Image (cartoon, rainbow, N blue to C red; front, side, top):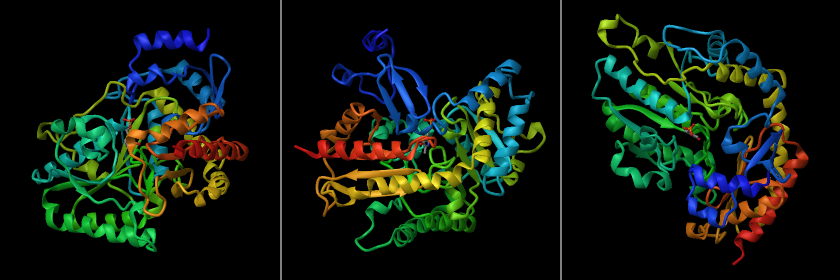
Length: 449
Ligand SMILES: *Cc1c(COP(=O)(O)O)cnc(C)c1O
């Protein structure tokens, strides 16, 4: 079979995510036949380095032998069982291990099957916690500008990316938005840390004035990924944790994208030295294999729901595939690879290589910023370097980088004008240098007029 045949059938029957389908009148859809490590291969033998980890999920390459084996073994035993009233070994072992590797004080694991669903569960749990404590008036959430927490209505309400949110605004609950510590907006000569502290003042004020009506603050620690890979200093979260404690407000850390090593530590919260009240994980949890998500919380939160049935304090929330055993087996294999292969340590070398490989772009007249936290590196294309004036979004300059990269064996998928690398951890230094070369060429082409 050739690419064209499958594409024709695809366009008759499939509606693709996050896509204006009319784009495919001119932009070729790429059907993938197989994956192997960082490589994706189409039906005509064209190969692409998956520089975006297939939307930030893949950690250890496609068709990873150890994860494949874990799935095979689990399928032979048990594919799925209801998790209410019943249990199974993978979910018990995974919960024990997640409690072990996450920041101290996260004691209980509640499962769902995608990131947005984990956010929804955390929002409901936080509200319900305060209700069980006789404070039903605490029913508002605080988010940060430029944040993203998923696409279901509750998660979308918590987000602040206009592209995804504006159309549905009339359907969404209201939230209180504090300004982001996004270091891209700092003043000339100001440090990321000083800017984060300055931005925190508005958060402090919101909490001081309105904590009686607030359940929780929801944040993406260190990187606002869908918000154009904008990054900030961890001090913001250290301050936020302290303030949330002072005002009696929960802290929900959305580590769905940044968890599992993307920022250089296993979890981003480690860099702020904090434990959130709720931590949401998905994406890398299953290394790019299967949908699974989890909300970790404390025994203190758990205990607020623990009572006789008739009191109606229980968390009566579920999804059909909650805690799926195959997903849990994959997550266990993922954690095993982190341990045995000393992934976090080895990634330091790859992170340094990523930084070096794009260092020359700092002087590029259309590069406004190069930023990095660990295994995530972003390059912001600008129309004017001095004023950081953005290219109008309608020009779709990032798309030109994407199209160029495809001709050079790379899947780079910019977010607007931001070209970024978030590769699987099995990438080599040589492949990183290739991506940097392709990105440089792509930016040169994209900024031309
Ligand atoms: C991807 C993402 C989500 C939503 O996860 P889905 O599995 O796509 O629903 C939530 N928060 C962040 C930070 C994400 O990157």
